[in-house]
Image (tube, rainbow, N blue to C red; front, side, top):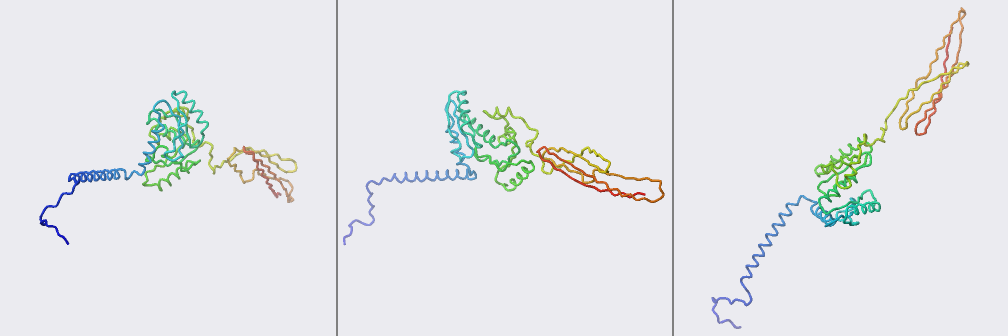
Length: 325
């Protein structure tokens, strides 16, 4: 076994191609990695409570993709589709008049309760406002009331969700209270939409001034006296009083004919007491007691005709016995 003749305290040889400056580069890399991890941690901490951060970024990119550099884009907006597929490019025109013609044609070919054909210009904020108007317009009821769940943290096109449609305002407010109690702490507002588009728009956007074609629709809007005029209360009762005519022939039989006209969807209440009363008196100068039995038959025929084409016939017979001296 051979051993080295060099003393043990001799310096170690330096390996070839090993530069001591490389260690400094490794140290700098570690510092850069540490700073990057700190930046990522701060970013996660900043957006940790925003669960819709990535969804909002995707929605913003979708609007940017549909915004033209110049001229106008005819865009189909469908609130029922997920983010990233809500907008679809249909046509493009350089002039406004030509774009409006294309918009009208495309609207006839793309009809649906969740779809609107919009006209995008080169301004991103305008297009976002136009989408917000379209979303409110889709959720505005034609009559009566829509109860809407409003989440402002979601992107435009997903902020509004239909909860229920009600014909009675009392039922709409009851459902609203139920949803408010169950959604506490989630940051979701429960709104009641009426057929007034401008009122609904103000509740969502804070402005009652629409943009684009929706401004024209709002200018022609009329405020109805009742948001659900066709509805009548289910328990409505109406008492009808009519004139009665009695004809008494010689055989002491009285016949009363009565006709009552009642408005449709209302209830006519007929009195259960006898319609006619007969009082019979007999006077005689004879000192001999005399008993007279008189029977009077009263026949009542009542016909009730309603506006809906229905009729009700009531028959009643009354007998009167009188005894006199």
